[in-house]
Length: 313
Image (cartoon, rainbow, N blue to C red; front, side, top):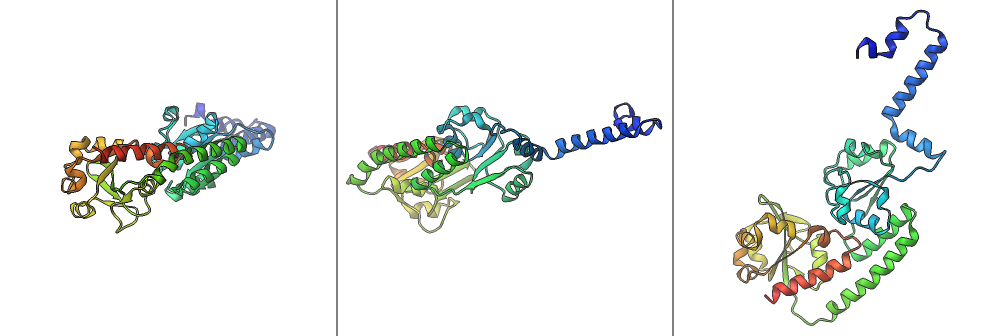
């Protein structure tokens, strides 16, 4: 810093500076340091005098959808890259991918609350944010319909919208009953479905037991074609052929990555399966199908239709 721009220079070079001037300067510098280094401390101090507007960073597309559904979108100041719905959410400042967050990027938005699922991280980053004075609420993933209802209720409480949350829960229950009833009573063969997750041509995985994809399969009366492992693991020709799926399920984004249906049939082993031989490939938009947000009843109906269409050619 140059001498002309350094306020300390004036005091040090002026013996006649009064003690009161020095005291005033030091108080000003102390306030400046506090404002620069501890913004959250100042935010919470101010809230004790006057309730400030809520500034939320939402990490998880399903959580972001809930906030919009509760009418609290004006309180959002940032979201992660999985927050793709509604489209307005994609216009908000992004804090990056939910699993590779940085505390600097989030704190730069001056939030006074961070909402995240337990999939978010790294955990050390969430601890840093909390240590900086910003409350972090981590909600269980729980990829079930009941889990979504619990998250709606919890978020409604956290953002002071319990009545709206109760209304949304009741609407979702009604929608769920309408969607599930015909699936439960339908007498059709249970298809074996292989879910393929493809972020890039070099990163292709299949969904095993306990995955969000398997949860969706069960809701539409389908069977996961692979059972020997939990979560996701890399696709191999042997595992695909052994699974003998009737249908191969992708996300829309993943199917585009591999080059559409023709590209999917070139994946290792897939052409040697019943699904590959009959070109039974289905897909849905990633967050719609796997986000487990307020649109879950509609996502189950859409997946059911997609699998029926694939089976019937």
